[in-house]
Length: 168
Image (cartoon, rainbow, N blue to C red; front, side, top):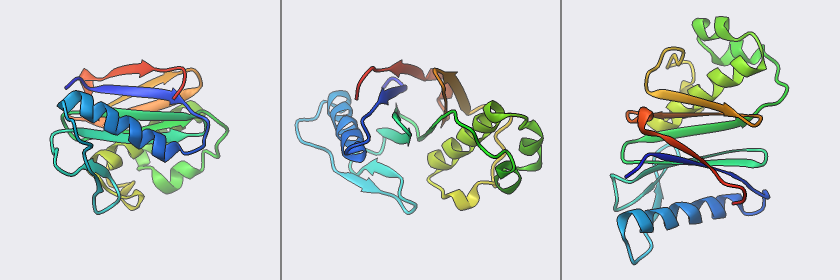
């Protein structure tokens, strides 16, 4: 399976339903299924397809954006719309090296999305946010464009292709 990240603009109504419908559609196409696969959730709420352990996906949303990542290896994705943020938040959630790297809003979201992506890839909660340093992590790739920052974490991170869609 190609490692892909789809980014959509959405209308905020029924976003979860629409995102999961898209995941099911892609799973049926990729796995060549006639029946709908069953969605399940892991211990910390990470969604997966019950009978298809090699089909990995992850979903993230921020304001009017949604990102859906697909891979044949565990994957985590986080998207954040750039906005004003209190940089002091870094003191609470980032390691000391990460705190030193945060000098403005762009660098804050660079670190934040990478941290969320690794936690989501591992299926862990935000309670473990300081557990991983993301500054030089080679399994995380970050994209910035059009007012957003997106990070994806996977063993196959270099294979990811970013696909932007106009409407979800």
